[in-house]
Image 1: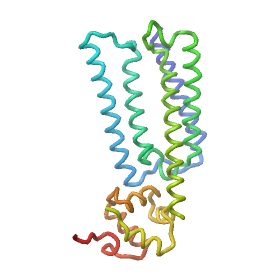
Image 2: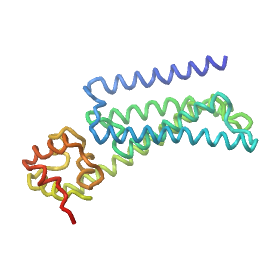
Image 3: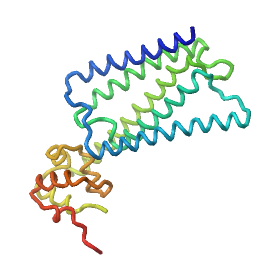
Image 4: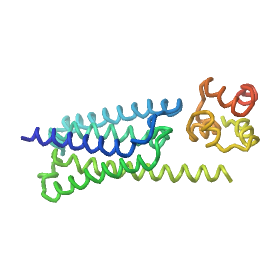
Length: 175
Length: 66
């Protein structure tokens, strides 16, 4: 039964992303075209994500070695690792102007980040209020949507901050 | 090392970083990174920039020995 919920959760999340990406990006051709510097930075971003993922597993090893119970359940633990890796990779890419392709528009990216984040956050919040996300101090698999929602909120803020800094830099350069 | 020659050549042509980026088919941040010395472009991009600014490779990208 738990497996069904996990699979359903993935299907809903992927479906939402596909719908939002299709609607928001329909008019753009080559919207994921990256220049040479962006490709290089994306390579570094993947490396950062990989090492963040490895770091999470090292943390789990320390918990196990000290015989301290890991405060995440067996289903959520690997998913949390994936999210940490993805978050690290995306953060690096955003900060080094390699997340959005040259032809993509900011509105499309904001739409995707906000919609996916908000949908997951609302589902996660309902699980939190029903006391299913955290049970006896352990983060359960029902918290996945909340974690994704928080992650997307952080990435949206990071993207907005980076855009503001870029706009300021462009304005200073023009003056 | 900052590429002041590139910045000067771009200013001489009255082009913004965004204008030059569009002509060369890269992002504005890439041009900015090259000017700040944070990124070494490939020869292909160097040539595209030279063509856009009517300059030679030596004039824009040769580093004088100190």
